[in-house]
Length: 353
Ligand code: ASP
Image (cartoon, rainbow, N blue to C red):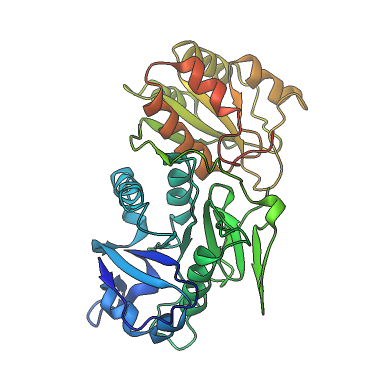
C-alpha cells in the first residue's frame, strides 16, 4: 500500500483507492494508436488535486492494470479479498475500474460483501485522465468525497456498493452502462439515484441501504461461472438453443425476453425450457427492455414460460442477475430450491419486491 503524502486532514477519514485499470488511467500507444492501461503513478501525476481532498488516501493497484473487458470472476474475488482484508483499516473504498464491465463487477461485489457497513464506490472515466476535457478528475474526486462522507453520528452516508459517474451516485447492482460516449455513461433504470452531485452533493438517504452495524462484514468469495446469458430473437433456431441448454456443467441461464417477459410460443422452445428446468437448471427471465419489470402473467406468451419453470427476474438488470446466480450457485451448491427461491428475494437492494 502506498500513501499519498501531505493530505489535508479535515475529517481524518481513511480511504483505500484501488486502481484496476480502465480508460481513466490509459494513454495512447504511439505505435498502434490504441488506448492501453498505464500504472497508478501516471494517473496520480495527473490529479495533484487529490491531495486536497479531506481524506487520508492510500493506494493499491492491480498488477498489471487491465482493460475491464478482460475482467474475470477471479479478479472480483481478489477485489473482495482486498476490501475484506483491509476492512478495519479504512473508512471507505474507492475502486477505479473501466466502464465496460463496471456494472458487472459492482453487482458481483454487492453479493460477495455481505452486510457491508462501509462505502465501496466505483468510478472511472470516458476520457483518460491526461486529456484536457477528461471527466476522470471530477469522477474520482467526488467518489472519494462520497466514500468519506459521514452523518452526524459518524456513520457512512453510503454503506453500500455504488457507482459514481457523471454527477450521479447509483446503486451498483441496479446500474447498466448506457453510453459509449456520454460523460453520463451509466443509468439505473429501475431505481432512483442515491445521490446527485452538483454544487453540493445531495444524498437521498431514504433510498440508501441500512446495514446491521452490530454485525461485521460477511464476505463470501466463491463464484460459480456455469451460467449463460441468452437473448431471444424472432427466427431463433431451436436446435442451437437446445445445444446450449445441454452444455455439460451448465447450471443457470439468464434468458432475455421481449417486453414484460414474453417469448415465442414455439412448442420446441417451451419443451426445451421445461426439460432443462426439470434437470435442475435455474432459468431467469429478464426483459430486453431496460426499464420496467418482468410480469409473466400479463400475456399468454409470458404465462407459458412460467408454466415451463422459468423464474421471473422482476426488474433486475442482466448484470445483477448473472452475478447473483454465480454467487448463489457457489453458496448453495446442488441446492436448486434455495437458489431459485433467493433469486426472487431482494438480497442487496437489487430488485423491487
Ligand atoms: N475499455 C475500457 C474499459 O472498460 C473503457 C473504459 O474504461 O471506459 O476498461
